[in-house]
Length: 103
Image (cartoon, rainbow, N blue to C red; front, top):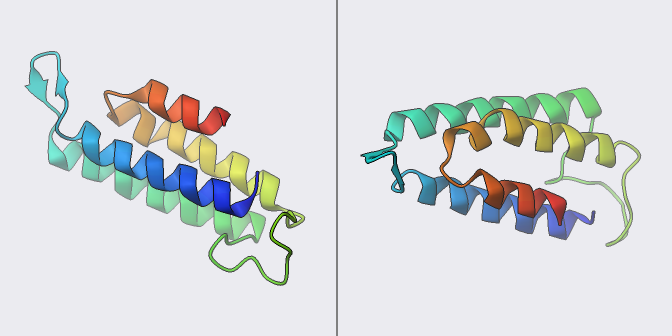
């Protein structure tokens, strides 16, 4: 997956997270603090992925536009796992995340 696609998918996922805060779930609204806790947990796990895999999508180094860094795939898998275990469990739209990750 190219860096551009990853960043686009990540942006869509975050937009979905924000939308999920106001979507009804079994007749009640998801509490903003619940979603904020999930976002905070995701950010922590995402930072761990950067540290563990030594890859930062914001600073990929001297790579070409369609070149993968040596640890980029492992980083992406780590970031997707972080999404699944934090934001996906806190949203009313988990299939949206699955679809974006699959792309």
